[in-house]
Length: 114
Figure: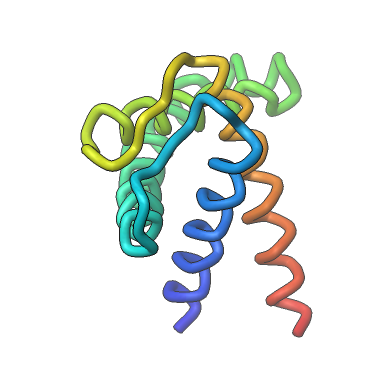
């Protein structure tokens, strides 16, 4: 059940991000948001974990801010592997990764308290 909640929160974060960031678009349809959230979750878990491990010195030197660059790269990878997500440039992906991290982190904390 916890996995379904996190998946829904990530889909909501993608939905809100498409409104805020003009360079990120997802084709219409609620299932497309869930598809992108699932694909991002799998890619970020598998490849993102390895990248965070290999770039640990850069993450430490930037006080953790380099993680947003890794998440932006994962977003660009989801864009490449998915037909429903379109990201114009890397800066849009970087801003999108910041917003997605904030939204999903805050809502996960709120749900854990409830």
